[in-house]
Amino acid sequence: MTDHPGDDSTADGPADGPDEAAAIAIRLDALLSERQMTLTELSDRVGVTIVNLSVLKNGRARAIRFSTLARLCRALDCQPGDLLSYHADQPAARPSS
Image 1 (cartoon, rainbow, N blue to C red):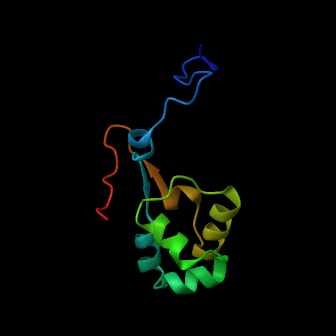
Image 2: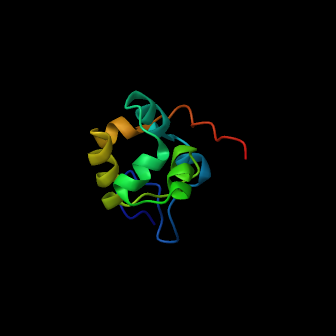
């Protein structure tokens, strides 16, 4: 049973999985470089630990709160679309651990 027309989600759970989430690319490293800002400085400005920002930067984050996204955008003077991109036909490569 689908919850929404055109949606592959079912009442038993969402259809997205690791491959679907891999299609989201995070441009945090590029934005930091463009702004000549360190991860430590960004951490201080947004109140997110360096470890959590590193997880986001390296593409290993599974979720992000809108409040965190808003603070990142404020600190980096950018829009959410500058930070996130979606590549449906080519899932983003995951960095090796």
